[in-house]
Image (cartoon, rainbow, N blue to C red; front, side):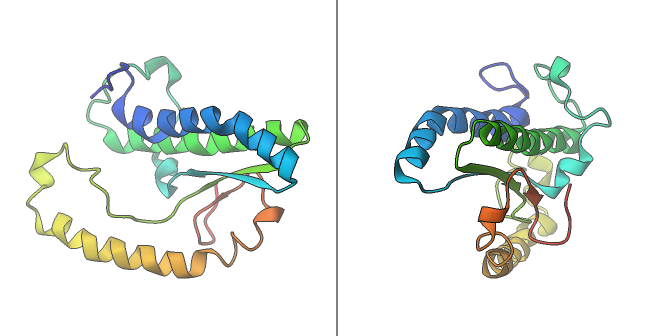
Length: 168
């Protein structure tokens, strides 16, 4: 499925949206960080599923093609792009001497409507039970996540974290 801009829908939604928002806010963030002498933070939401991207990584030459049957790899590529964007942005901001960090994070499983286009899943008991599983996982992460990341965020720049020992 393609977006209205003729970009593979998961890539458009999961990466291009974040990328565009970040770039639209970046000049304001730079100005604010300089004037207030307060650290700015850019956090891209990624996923551990970036590991399921295509073997060659991001298929920039095929970004305008329908994903076909491999939606997991398409999703993985979109989340890999979030991580790569944060890493590159962190490098550039540091080179420019700006007091803004850029990182990427996997919040863990969260109940979303990601499967809304897969009607064969909509009535399955497994799909319906995910709400309780995902919600409890999310609250557990919320309670514990700020310990390693938020308090020590001034030490972090250009990192990926999933709230566990996993890293890229």
